[in-house]
Length: 148
Image (cartoon, rainbow, N blue to C red; front, side):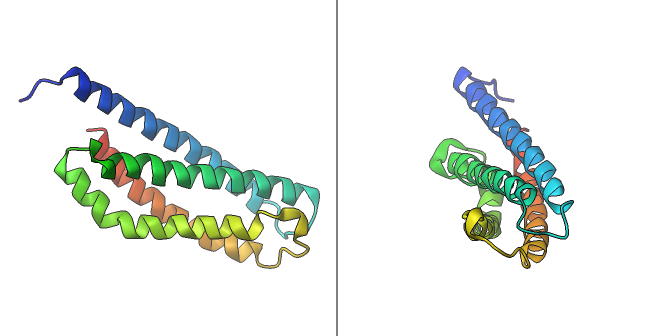
């Protein structure tokens, strides 16, 4: 059994803080997702536009934190546990694909004042929701290992 060094302890604390921040953003994201979904049928009114704008901003923050926070930390060499590196490498393609889907969603709805029809929003939210659920499963696997 090895004794934790101050550097080792600090790295673990940083990982735990990052995971907590990710989980908090995830919770905020799902809350906004549900609020947007409750506005069906969608129309170009202020309530839809306001919530969709807030949702899109949190969506980008959330996927960025997961992608550039968690993954950068792991793949930049600060993570030394081989099991985590192996799993992170294995799930990265799907994780990255979901990040791209989220960015595509954001790109489609970011110029909210220019959108006159929200005919595709219900389907787009459904697809995004399924992808985010997969991403959460992937994140949870990785985060659980990081916290051990």
